Amino acid sequence: GAVVSQHPSRVICKSGTSVKIECRSLDFQATTMFWYRQFPKQSLMLMATSNEGSKATYEQGVEKDKFLINHASLTLSTLTVTSAHPEDSSFYICSATGPTPNYGYTFGSGTRLTVV
Amino acid sequence: KQEVTQIPAALSVPEGENLVLNCSFTDSAIYNLQWFRQDPGKGLTSLLLIQSSQREQTSGRLNASLDKSSGRSTLYIAASQPGDSATYLCAVRSMGDSNYQLIWGAGTKLIIKP
Image (tube, rainbow over the protein chains, first blue to last red):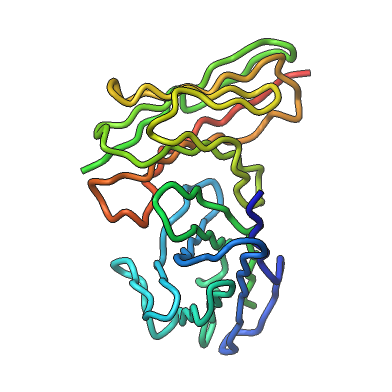
């Protein structure tokens, strides 16, 4: 089946630094990737949608200059949290789908970000 | 606008019971419906994907049905085990909204008591 690999699984960083999270589709062409964040005991919140080779589309209220998304290839998307602050601490999850509507969605295992 | 509802929000049953989780959606114009499970602090695992032209999908002890005309899907879990405890989410890929995005139900938190 389709596999999406997300790294790192956990990261602790200091306030003011930047953190990059990678999301790779291992066995299919991920024409569209999504980035979510999830707070404890809450539902997934979609942050942005990215299509390979295009600029990401951000959901309302998500700062595009703070959460930089790059989807430069059909197998890799990255989320960079810039100038991280403690309130950015959260669980970030990526997902990917293929080029036609009948593709399902495959999720990464998530990244627990803690900003100290 | 597509809306997805899951009932019940939480369910606690003894080990060994068969159970059914329900998912309903308001717009039948969908490409497919997908069931996921999420364990605490973990990512999502896809359980079953049902295309709009299909009626059901099976994987091991899991069976998912889809009745597109009535806007319903059920996830049947046979002979439940404590390891089945998780939050179960259904999501539809809707033609009405952006066809890239999944529309999510709020989930059913399932606890299987040993």
